[in-house]
Length: 182
Image 1: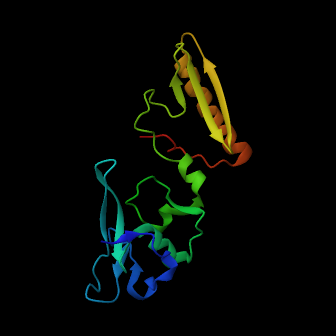
Image 2: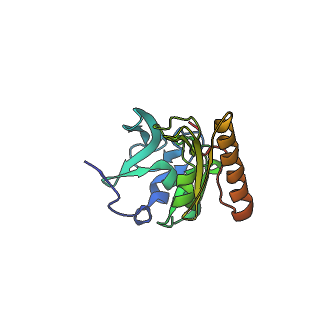
């Protein structure tokens, strides 16, 4: 069975066997071997979510994510401290214009709303005393505010949104509109 991560993506001659192709669902097409001209790879089932979530290629006894191969083919090596982010949040959209190289921390800040979120708003939670707490982390600091009384949930949501905008404008935090969206 193939294993993930034995050798880095740069260790293989991708440019000799694959090409970036926007007409392929995966974004890749074989250019040599018995599958020449055919779409490369297939959907990878995300067992945590019970659905298909991204494309992968199995080659050289390893599994590779298609978007990482695409990035490598277009731009070259990928710094191990970085992630390839799908700008629109759709991990199956491997169009090169939808991919960007970003810090792993920034990629985490732009993830979808957690499945255990009970308030419906990222960074806003109901406290045991009945108040609503809004919080956001940036650069290892946590900012938070509590709200009580009528309209406190809406105030907490508004505070969270304004802090996101403030962090983006003052520190170029890179939080996108899709942060915390289901």
